[in-house]
Image (tube, rainbow over all chains, first blue to last red; front, side):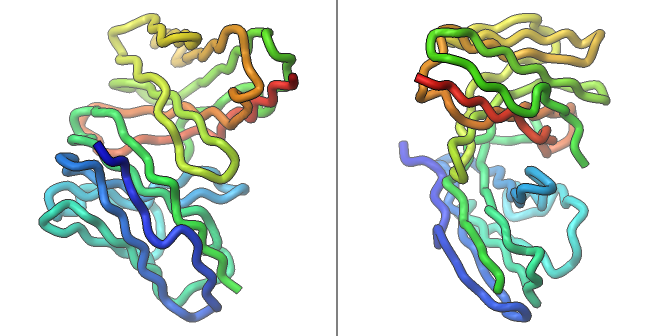
Length: 114
Length: 111
């Protein structure tokens, strides 16, 4: 079974631009979560989607948004990029995180904002 | 916000030695999971222990959970250089569709 895939793997943007990251979960998984990882803050939860509905959102500004499609693939968007948005963005999927299933992570998208 | 706190922040040992990492958390949990991350890459799931379990084994890994002390430990026996990575604990709570991660322990295993 293929693992979680994320595209692109690396991205360089400039301040003020916007970016869209994509995540394809493991086949059959309906829960997709997004995390931001930085050296200073560690792993911070962004949001979680299940069956196209956002069930939980972390403490991030409205510039961070996401969505999930009917095939469970998910995208996250960051608008008006700031230098502090430079981070590794990780996507994880599970059968249903609300019933405490194991999350499986993708390799991440490393975003650098200049 | 971070719920789990790993201890120590960094650990350096020789191949063949055992490595023990600890995780403390603040609220009641449904399960606790340990993950490994090699430098700048995705997280690999190691083991999940539920709140009604006290100990689990997986290969060279042994995880314990003490819900009365709100703490868990991960023991890696007979460490190898390939075990060099950061290790994170993550807690899940019933009814919450999120995991909360600690800041991790960086383990360096020298040949």
